[in-house]
Amino acid sequence: QQQVKQSPQSLIVQKGGISIINCAYENTAFDYFPWYQQFPGKGPALLIAIRPDVSEKKEGRFTISFNKSAKQFSLHIMDSQPGDSATYFCAASAAGGYQKVTFGTGTKLQVIP
Amino acid sequence: GAVVSQHPSWVICKSGTSVKIECRSLDFQATTMFWYRQFPKQSLMLMATSNEGSKATYEQGVEKDKFLINHASLTLSTLTVTSAHPEDSSFYICSAGRTGSSYEQYFGPGTRLTVT
Image (cartoon, rainbow over all chains, first blue to last red):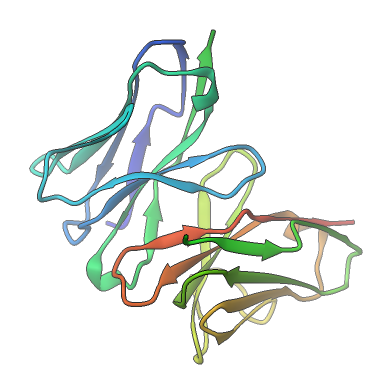
């Protein structure tokens, strides 16, 4: 019940295209859904996060779409750039979980020129 | 703000020796810190949760006597890998949860441990 399922495992997108990564969760206690970006040899960095009281959050080229009833959320990267090439992790946590984060399996994104 | 540092960034040690990794929150207080392990091309695996001034809570399957965690202050947690073996070689990442926040957690840059 603690799992967060993420797909696809890898993704190749052309420069300027839209990258879409999907995640699903089972634990209804989760109430905070961050996305992290990780470059090789570096720690994850928080990219954008959403609470379940909204269905969408946008920050620059990055948008989270959230479907509470389906227990699914996704990351959309608009106008993808080669510099976006990284591994992306969705995650989930609960207010009562003392900041403990459950990670998805990761998506390796490659943006080709 | 919200910077977490780790030291060292990489370390090579011989089998049987111990290695200590430090995790510091530089500009905020962190009551809770987390230690993760990451194998190549895999997700982060939570090893343990440490709370300032109390014993760490280890995830199932993580040897507490092998991975010693100390969280002596609100800005410093340490992970000591004791009697290291080649299979302990991995990327170790810490994160720090901002005191007073239910969600805010910031990650360090990671430490690459290689045991020869």
